[in-house]
Each structure stands twice: as C-alpha cells, then as structure tokens.
Image (cartoon, rainbow, N blue to C red; front, top):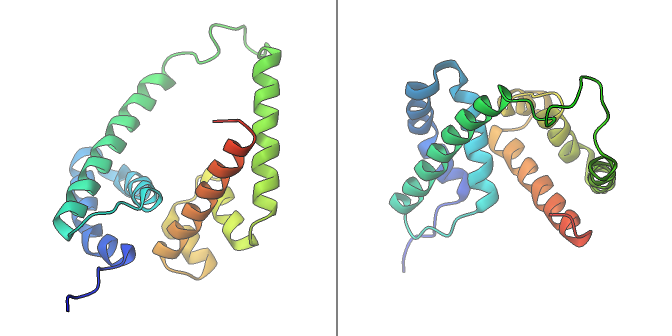
Length: 166
C-alpha cells in the first residue's frame, strides 16, 4: 500500500518560501504580489503531477511565466491602449457592448456565490488587496482565500463560456 498523494495545499505550503525567495531575487518588494498570482494560477490549473518534483517544476514554470507577464504588462502600460483616441473619447459601441455583456455575466455569477467567496474576488480584482490581507480579513488561511478565488474563476469561466464569451 502506498502513501496517499499530498493535497494541493500541502504541496503549496512546502514550496511557498522557496518560490517567494525565487521571486524576491527578481522583483524585490513585488514578490509577494507575484507569488499570490502564481499560487492562484497553480490552484486554478490543478496540475496532475505524479510527484513533488514534477509539481515543483510545474510551479517554477508558472512563476517564470508570471514574471514575464508582469514585465509585459509594464511595457504595455507605457503604450496608449485606446488606439490613440483623444482623452475622454468614448470607446466604439461594439467594445462598450461587449464590456457590458461581460460585466452582466460577472455580476450575475458573483451574486450566485456565497458572499465570502464573491468578496475574495472583489477584494482582489477591484481593490487590489493581497491574498494574505484577504485571509486576515476573512479569518481564514491564505490557502482558503486562494481556494475561494479558484472557485470564482472556475465559475466565471463556465458562465462566460455558456454566454459565448471567451
């Protein structure tokens, strides 16, 4: 008989310090924020890794990609995203309609969730609150806060796909 496979929370807990150190060496004070994104992506992906070493390799791939995404976002922030529209000019009607459709699906989906789960989404996305702070506010562990965000992301993906929005 073999030992049961470790839970996602246990695997994350074992690598938390190592990944944070890896990120600190690359982005300094922003490491915790990047780490939260890494753990959210790992939890959302729910990888089927046969052993801890495969899981560790997967997490490092996610961490490297998160760093690349962060650098890309920084570069994009320097380029106007409005296609050169005059300040205050409204976006085209199609973009506004698509945004309204997405907002309606998000709002409807969040209302269908338990309040503490929806709150994690709003705190993280609207208020840019760190998962550690969300956990403190909700009186739960960071892994629970990450798990709640994972639930929201899964439900939103499903709801958006059902509406034909990808």
